[in-house]
Image (cartoon, rainbow, N blue to C red; front, side, top):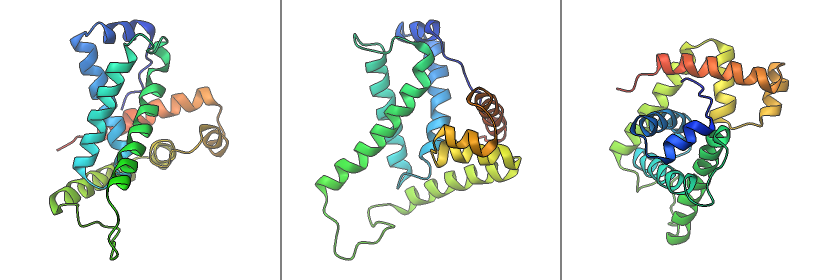
Length: 182
């Protein structure tokens, strides 16, 4: 997964509905959200619903009158939306459905197919991570799966924030080259 440096020009093209820019944007963040959400959702259908909602909200907000003004912050902006949409998705579900007395954490509402697809996606991500160098895999797990504080990660890896960006770029690139969805 290439670490892309978003800029104001990219943001302008995205808001101008440039097809190539939108295609790049969706491709770029689909992979990031898959990596981020694969362990946090109950089913593949939930993953797809959350990703679609993130894109819908980002596209409507980022180019709106009170939208994002600095293209360099686009990645963090999408990440924040992803976190909020994920939280809202399951919070809303919790308000409308009461848990049965014999509640099973696997959930009866998860179809066998959805569970299999989610498990396959998780297994594929874990397989790719296990094939990678330990440092790269640990870095990706810490940032995207465990969502740890970047300052803590910097201390653990003995690097500063700027070099962490370089390491992430390289690790994501290696992950993207090995991860090829079926």
